Length: 147
Ligand code: FES
Image (cartoon, rainbow, N blue to C red):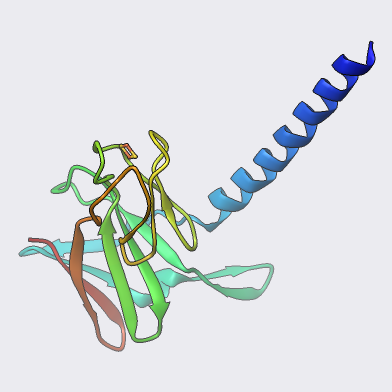
């Protein structure tokens, strides 16, 4: 193996390893919730869906994802703090691809647009914010108004 091929294969290995680790971390943080109720355009989710226990340790999730039958794309519900939840449709406002949600951002795999946890554009080519939903809560549940 000559020097050029060695450097090329070493770099590819490094990039692949970093990508695999990043992908595993991203997958770890996504929780698709099937336990929700949909009644008269209101989705109800228990707040406990944001809590998970792993190795006897309680972990607070930053977001969860649900897919109501009435919507063409999943929605991501972000817990910004105990008194603030934001819900966005995971459909890119550029050309409609499904977004990938992460802890601090939502990323479009088609052309690279990015949105913050409030659904606001942080990187183009998208120019408009995501469709969002009014989200309220009480002691036990979160309520998302689908309009
Ligand atoms: S469809 Fe999302 S950036 Fe183009």
